Amino acid sequence: MKRLTMLCWLIASMHFNLLFAQTNSWKFRHDHNGVQVYTRKDSTSGILELKLRTEVRASLRAVVALASDIPNLKNWAFRLKESYHIRTISETEGYLYMRTDFPLPFSDRDMIVHYTFKQDPHTKQVTSTSKSAYNLIPEKEGIVRVRAIESKWTYTPLPGGMVRLEYQLKSDPGGSIPKWLINLAVDDGPVKSVLGLKQQLGKYEQATVGFLKE
Image 1 (cartoon, rainbow, N blue to C red):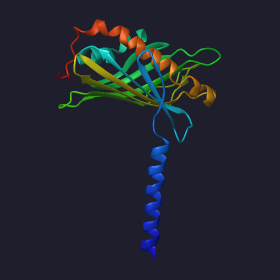
Image 2: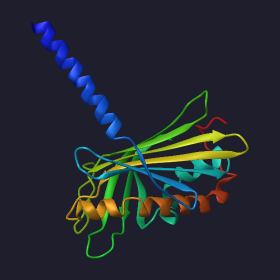
Image 3: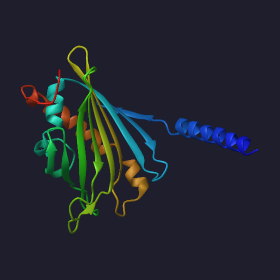
């Protein structure tokens, strides 16, 4: 009887997990100037997760060099006021501070993330992941510290001198912003950031990236 009960429980659990995966799949939202936008709702927070996808005519080296140029982030990341390394572990790993200008009446947000770059030796695809390390330094007065954030960039070389960019973001800006408002504007800043990134790429075609294999 106990074995039968356990078997039924396992079958029910598998069915629930499969059903959740089906209902929580990415949904296409719209295309904005060549940037495809997808969203799905986080089951815990109710806040939308985001996925962006686009292609650029550039070398993989230029894309990765731009992405790893932390002082230049404010020149293309939407409403970013400052960014700098808190701690550098290696060429492919470190801790980063970022502060974003939020429109009134909301306070600015800042975040500390642990980031890594990895390259697949066979496909040459580069993946950059960032996760919150919010307690690494003390919070600053008048600024809301973002505690929940995970992001992932994937850079995939394609034939014909193209690179596919894919960006995923799961975050909660915290504070008193209503969830409906967060979800309403979930893709606005990230899409503008990707468009800004595209405009910067030409400056990096002669750059070098030590860890990159092309």
